[in-house]
Image (cartoon, rainbow, N blue to C red; front, side, top):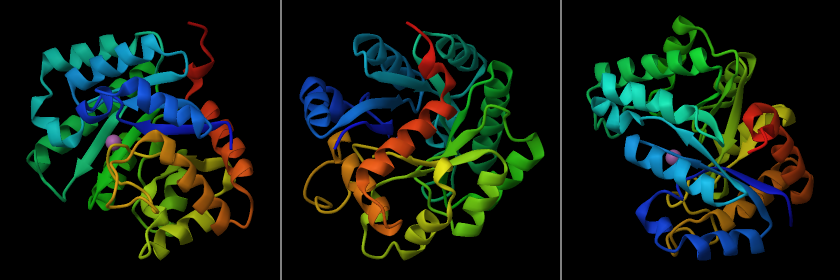
Length: 262
Ligand code: NI
């Protein structure tokens, strides 16, 4: 396998950063050609930018996750804007709503989501959206604010096929992660069947959500993105190389700054 693009990985997480050269070497050995390192607060966004500056095949995204929404004040808004202008930053995120863990009050999450959508629009950057048990509210806010012209990705997609097609209609890509390999994920595999091929992305969300066959046995890492590609290929009755090629081209279309020379 070659040319895999893990479009959502937290190499800036302590568990991965401590062995980052090993993590990257194992990913490359499994055919991972590019990775997008995603921030969730100011510090992790800074680390994402720093990691991207050190490795030719890693890019960065900066933003404040709904868990950390209560930390988004005027200073951190300014810092996000500043970081978003750094070389190799290709997206704003992850941003959104998490009504499963509710680590920030919901009105605070909504406000942080709206503010960062506005930053993304101002900078013409695509957004990386985190949705956990909050699909209806995310859609309400996107329709209310208007979808960003630069588009975005519904990362680690967990809604149904109708929702996916509505998101596609609004200019979004659908990020498929490890859960597509889980036994109970028939609804997600239905999404994978129905989404137009030019809107699919693959990701690990490592160190979380290890795919089968390593679920429950190993922490996730980007080398495992091939299991996601292989499952998508099985569902869509094609081969994993084709899925790698298609999803890589999709990522390049969405994350336009990948083409910037640095
Ligand atoms: Ni994530």
